Each structure stands twice: as C-alpha cells, then as structure tokens.
Length: 151
Image 1 (tube, rainbow, N blue to C red):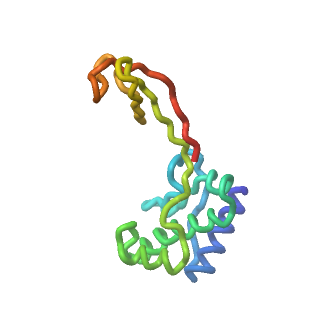
Image 2: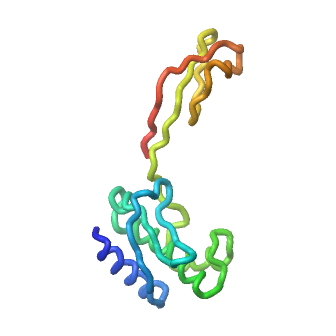
Image 3: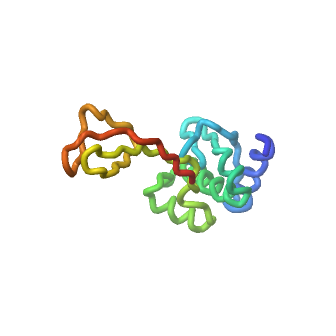
C-alpha cells in the first residue's frame, strides 16, 4: 500500500464512520515498533505501523485507523481524546475500532542456568552473572542462550 492509498483510505474511513473529513496527513512510519498507530497532538497528523497491514491485512489496518481517528476527531472537537476518557471509549465502541494493536514485535528472553542446582532463569534483560546468583541455592548463574518468541 502506498502513502497515497493510505491517505485515501483514512479520508474514506473518516467520512464513512465519523461523518467528518480528515484534513491532515496520514503516513506509514517504520520506526513504530509495538504500536499500531500514533496521533500527533501538535500537527494532527497520523502515523501507522506498516507491519499491521503486512501481517494482518486491510481489515485490521482499518480498525487501527478508526482508533487513531477517534483521537483525532475528539481532540479537534475539544472532548476527551485519551484512552482513559469516557468519550474516547464510547466513540471507539460505536465505530468498531480496535482497543489494542495486534502483537507486532517479537519478544526476546535471556536464558540462564544455575551451575549448582540446574534451575533455569528467564529474563528480558541481560543480567550481570558476576553480581547476581541463583534465588534457590545462591549458586553461580551461567548464560545459556537467547530465545526469540515470535508474535
């Protein structure tokens, strides 16, 4: 999908579901890692993660577009546009937008094993094996491998 096609799709969804025009720019942003889209408060532009379209298709992208358009239209009308606001939750439910983006980033874990008791320890961040020890027996921890869990 090109930038122009995305712009047209956002404008179409805005008119169809919100009965209001989208007057700003919509674009793909590959720097978005764990989120489906972003609404910019100052410029009122929308960014979308291209992985949503590539992995899940047009239907899921439209749900993310609806979510971001809820932020957009509520903010411009001076109503509650944040996730916690009642106005946002109601409008999102009315339009059928997604509350959360689908999983996009693969999680990586570090696997450590205790030399003494053999207990395995799994952490997202690397730990200093010279400083930290096994929680069961206070034995020395040894790095074993990195595990990548795909979404």
